[in-house]
Image (cartoon, rainbow, N blue to C red; front, side, top):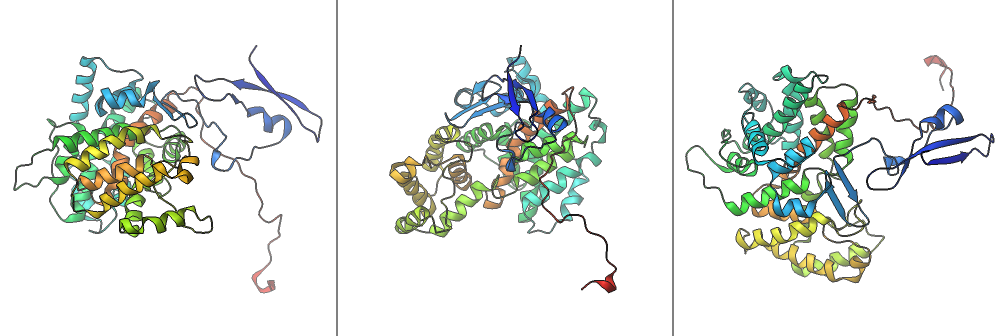
Amino acid sequence: MPDRVTLTDSRSGKVIELPLLHGTHGPPVFDMGRLYRELGYFTYDPGFLSTASCHSAVTFIDGEEGVLLYRGYPIEQLAEHSSFYEVAYLLMNEALPTQAQLDNFTTLISQHTMINESLKNFYRGFNHDAHPMAIMVGVVGSLSAFYHDSTDIHNPAHREIAALRMIAKMPTIAAASYKHSIGEPFVYPRNSYSYAGNLLHMMFSVPSEEYELDPVAEKALDLIFVLHADHEQNASTSTVRLAGSSGANPFACIASGIAALWGPAHGGANEAVLRMLEEIGDVSNIPTYIARAKDKDDGFRLMGFGHRIYKNYDPRARIIRNMCHEVLSELGNENDPLFELALRLEEVALNDDYFVSRKLYPNVDFYSGLIYRALGIPINMYTVMFAIARTVGWAAHWKEMIGEPQQRIGRPRQLYDGPAHRDYVAIEKRS
């Protein structure tokens, strides 16, 4: 007999038993489906912090222990031994690929890296100083108008090709957004490059010169993409799932995820790190800002430290820290005061009892922002980089959700505290 939780309503005296569900990892969950039907109550959980919104087998996080698993594989092992293509295959297909499967998957992605030529006209409609994330939302949302041959969500083949197209085209769409903002011609993808290498090529090459791909930059970007590929039921992933539950086409669902990611509390954190460093300005100012961060009456916060989910060290930060130092050593401009400032700030935070006792360690956003700067990626493209990597996770969750036999449209309830019943009063009688 399955475990159950017994609830007694002290008002009515009614007793109901709710099934207790157990996952592979994590706390058990009791099914609240009968609560409203039998007792007439909703649950109240702002931000859904204690609510499991779905079944999922994609990613698991244990914030207390600092654990992140992709399909059961520790992120540390994947970061050390895998590549973004392999991780993308894993998230999409539930298992690590054989060499033949990986080769076929890589070929399928490379066959869909180009975007419809008509989209160039769409880009020209955006102002030159439009934020690249604004362009991304618009362009990705428009893809169903160009690739409507793969929008039947009830057709498994359509779901597969739509997901592959999104993963393949996102770097091309992102690079075109960047090129539009600086007035340079769009660069076509080259399928001989890796996923990360192709993005760097499309962003930084020009038709008039040969482009030489830096292997350090390629390796660093590939690692960041692995670390950002998925992160359980975060705001943008939940948005993709909610949009998808209505039966919306996959391109619209991914566009909704990009819009949610754009928020500074979500995908904009690494951008906020660099802006904070610019505000601090100089190493000599660190003690002042550290004191401000410790002052509960001061609104200043150290961006890139601590994490809402991880109450221990963010496992991705442990991995990316070494890469960050390697990139700064190889590519970082020694005369850039922000790098010196960031490394000094990292040292202070890792050794100050205030931050250590509260587990406010540097997180993945702190280090990824520094790497992006060293690679020459402008600050307004940081969240775009995040969106490129997270597209794989969004697509995996969207496919999983659509394939659920019991899938229903999302419909959260509310605690209404507005006016009670009021009768309409003609305008001439209102005071």
